[in-house]
Length: 304
Image (cartoon, rainbow, N blue to C red; front, side, top):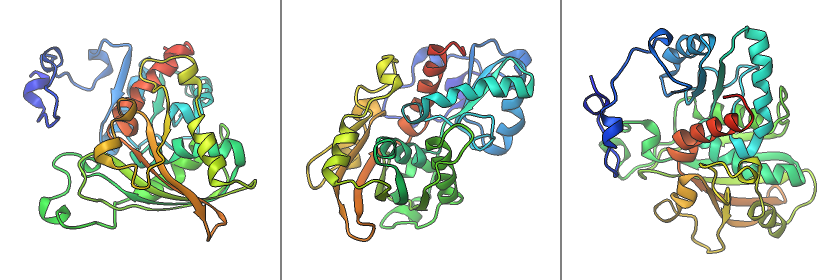
């Protein structure tokens, strides 16, 4: 069977003919000839399958949650923790395989951790509270039933809040260590097709003003930008000054969907800190695009 026959293509762009004509093959390392394996398997299927490919010598970049919190598996949002790639050396030594298993974060975590990175580096973080308004596409296809999501907000996404809290700590921490700040997430599904919007409230270790936070985010660049990796956006964080931005319809495709757009940066009276709104494309920065950028990062460091 060909991919075009097996998939129910629901994107606005047409399915590439070459990709549509690719043969569907079993998820068996002995039957696959590839340099990189991108996995989007359900978590329960990913556990054994991804390990089997890595053990057989493949480089696996996974969008599944199964191995994200494994101590020797890099959980990568490349601009936020490029140096975590060195965990691959430990993983290969510990598991005695020539392949590699690397994961990208939950889509909500991807937006949050990238927006926090320059603040964390510049001022440190004590407390972070995040409330998300997550697009329907984050639930996959067919996603949320129309009678559930139209004219409605669903204030629960199974396991999402726990993933965001754990994964953000791993990404922003040193290799093998949690970042150490307090974080609380509340996640909600809304009637938007693509683009996760997050209201974020922070208390920093060192004093910070909203102007200083804007400056450090707007000026932020990391190794993917310095190396000019193909999928890396020129500006990983774009700060808007308008009172009513970012908005999913207008801002989700910035940086070809790889930039996080931030706005409404202002003083928070509860934390005596700063609060802002961040938006990211959940299926690009939060999924496929991030996975490709991870592979490019690994290639740049000689792991592929």
